[in-house]
Length: 433
Image 1: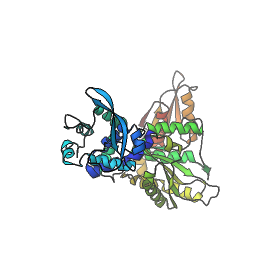
Image 2: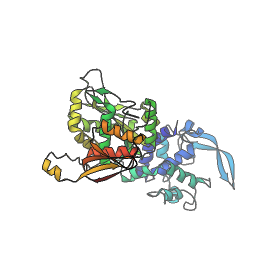
Image 3: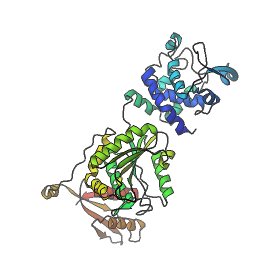
């Protein structure tokens, strides 16, 4: 069992410990990790005992005897002891929370723990001198527990629990599927004159602009495997929460239609169902629902705190799906984001020429480049591919400044151009046209 699998197994039970006994999930999870060695200890494997809780007089269930180390009289000593044996890991987590309050002595001994919302204080509350009787004999126990909480961001489970188990996790990142270097290494599916990689980037750019989450799109990979590996690396360097992967479906027949959402972990199926319905309703096409995506590379290789949802925004092979997506893309994105409790409004561009002409117009200027510079060639190709009008100024030293105008200040094309220049380390400034 790897770390991600173990954390996924104990997450729900740990969070519920707050609701049932007011014990912080971060403490529960970190103790489970430390005491069981990520579920690999003999006690965890043979007795489902994650916390090293011994079978004292309060215990009337099955018992498992095993050698254990105790720090006694200033040195580590191996002793044989009886431990509680459980039917499953979930039962072990429930009993762990109950352990702190199951009799008058423990209720008094751990009274500073119950209801404590600061994880550092909660750790101290189970050890001497705050507690008269210490949970562990290891003199470094406190440091080890806090290190685990902070390394694996287990305090984020506390935020979910204290805020209510129905609190919706936000989007940590979003990316456009396929693509890679150039235009493109992997275009993805094609149909109706469209490339999946291009449409996915249009959707993704709008999501990033609206919610400000991290963009984990890969535009560097030179192979399908390289693109996937780069994307996962980007995801694992992103904030925890939902990681959105934007795609289009395809089928040999143009009759295949609808939206579907693949979830990386079964616990995220309800959100996948909610997102799929919201997008399908906004587009006015079929809702294909939530699908098991545990086989996805990005799901299998992303860290445990990354909740992967791969959205198929329609069939690129179906002209009606693509027409619906073109006409209702903003509406569908807004509906999707509302599933994560984002209150966003997508402005419909004005068609009134007089009003539009009164809005400030802007230009994007690059700094000077030589005509043989790789960056000069890159930007020229981008402008050509996106049909953007521009002018050039030649300096006395022969270098060129490119001026792209004229944009509305909130133009998507301007936003995309700025993003492209930044991603390729090209200096630029925005000026009034």
